[in-house]
Image (cartoon, rainbow, N blue to C red; front, side, top):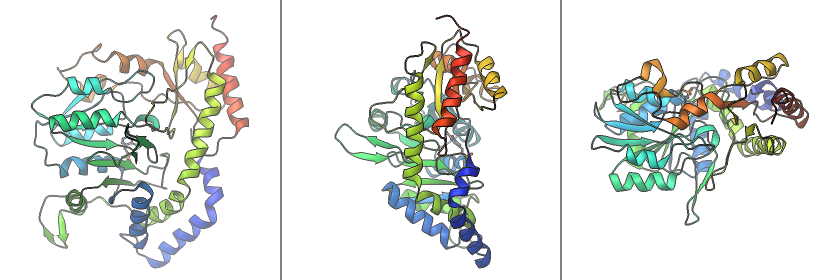
Length: 375
Ligand SMILES: *Cc1c(COP(=O)(O)O)cnc(C)c1O
């Protein structure tokens, strides 16, 4: 699905020298590269504060902890997403309230968000799924009218641009009260292990988030609030600095590959290409097709695998149908879009090193498989 080896080959000299530098300095924790990366990322995203942490799931947890939510408070998020978002909500004894997504674009449906609001609702967590922003203008409007926090999960959409109707452009993750991202190796800005970060323009929240990530202390050994230990390693920060300098090029490479897929599949009656929303750029963490119901998706996946082409199902089971998140609140049929998507989506290889030759090979094999169906 990704080709980190080829990507590494292109930046090997720089990466090895940076890692070597960290090894020689032995500043493995909170070394100078961590601050450098934080500042570089603040500049790149145009956000006042970046707080680095150990991974994207921690980022979401730190965000919820910083907002002083109380057990039983409700947090609204999408049912069609990665589990991390709902997981930290549940771990903090908050109540995950799941809502459906928009057909074709896969992002949380603002109409459904508004309908799910109750007196206990405290926050909305839009997930910018697969690389494009949820409808942040509507979500912010809903949040403002109901006095709710907005925490963006931008683990899949770092570097996406969101355009408001008045023309303002902001980076994904810098729009709500707090943005959360992951530097997992396969993410659009990935390190060589685990890593994560939070974004905010609120000075007080930024200070609180740094304290929580560091055992609740501002001054060492003086613990003002209950925190956790969540840090980005110096080695990972050194690697991220090098990759951040190339993030715009990496994003363009993904967008070019997506357009190439788009053109190939545009007129095929059995597949729908991913729809772009009008107010966000798409950074293509995933390139996800929706198959006609008559296509045997597992058969396609197996056929591709037999020809050395990886394909993945993101996500095979919506959260409301996962064992761990079943609740009397929901039953099968409540979220028809998510349920339909979970049975019909398939993601093709998408990364910065894809060549047209590789894409032609992938595309022709998808066509070969689909040829068995009469249309
Ligand atoms: C990857 C991901 C996370 C979690 O990130 P980790 O660094 O793996 O903890 C959270 N939300 C979404 C949408 C993700 O894709």
